[in-house]
Amino acid sequence: MTGEITKSGIDQLAAEGAAIIIEKGLRHVLVDIRTLKGRLGIMDTYSFVRRPFEKPKVKCALVDLPENQDYLNFLETTAINAGLSLKYFFDIDTARAWLKSSNLR
Image 1 (spheres, one colour):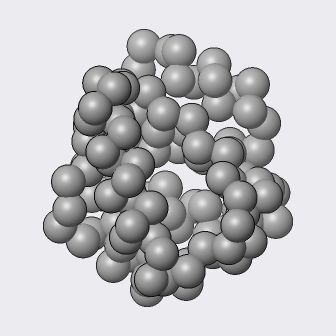
Image 2 (cartoon, rainbow, N blue to C red):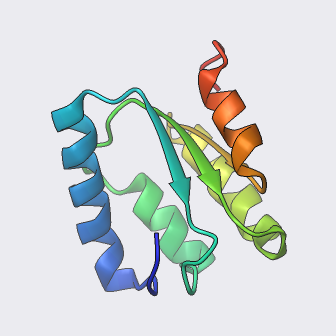
Image 3 (tube, rainbow, N blue to C red):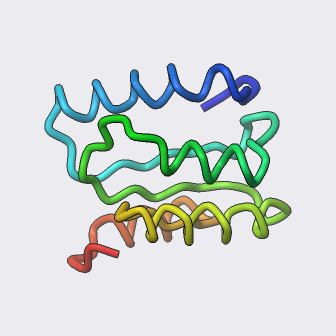
């Protein structure tokens, strides 16, 4: 992903992503946000993850930069608590290996 993340744009991005996942029948998703500018705030992230919209059951690997680790810890924990399978990585090959592994989390 590229561009700048905004509170108003995240809902559209999530809806478009979910539609693609459902249409293609995907079970594993790799999202590289290392070049994405900005991140949602903590409260906006919590609200977004908990918002009732169609969230396909997929195993999602999120690749980001190490300087965002505190945010990523919060995002991963919040997502797991909401019943999603999301794990963050700094290395794309490690993320791919996790997606190929048999465990759901």
